[in-house]
Length: 117
Image (tube, rainbow, N blue to C red; front, side, top):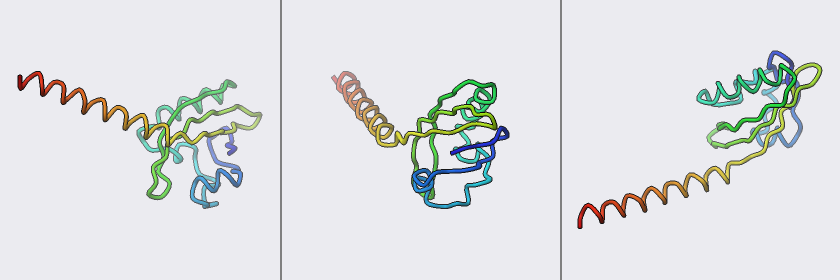
């Protein structure tokens, strides 16, 4: 995806379009609108870094329709704005969260056994 220096989406390739539900309506959208509000600070910081001529990376969640996805995103500065390169990390994120949940449950059970003893 390419964005101008103000954060307006100028282009998206077919793969990116497919990942975002196939809608060409994203052209003209502002960069921050691609991310859930809780990630806007990270996205805004990355955009500022790219505007200063440096690459920026952040991870953020996004809803495409009803599907929640997570992305590792790199912003690469260009003459007229920046290029976004995204890697879908949804599977790794879900696995990581499930592992934390299992660990929490194991810790709870261990504490319960100690307390009940």
